[in-house]
Image (tube, rainbow, N blue to C red):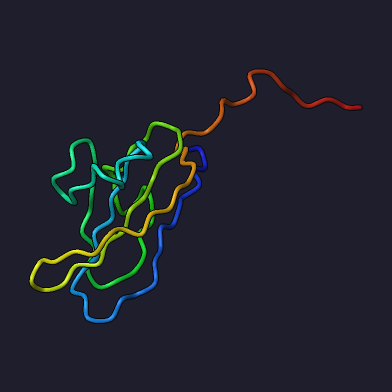
Length: 109
């Protein structure tokens, strides 16, 4: 079984919130004028309650598996459903191992 390096998305806690929403997109412009929180076309999101981190891919199986640069937006959400503007960060994600060597052996030299 190959070793796949996990990624941890984290953020500082915000006082008075009931949850956080983590958004992901490969489009760098999605968090600007086009951002409409959960109603944004082409964006994937996950609500997080009771913690301030997320282990990818274990805790978010729907996270994109195509290797590439992804933009992560994190919002704070209160008990009334109001959400903050997103804190946005970016990172390179790749969840596939390289190919194994095709030839090798053991010799006496």
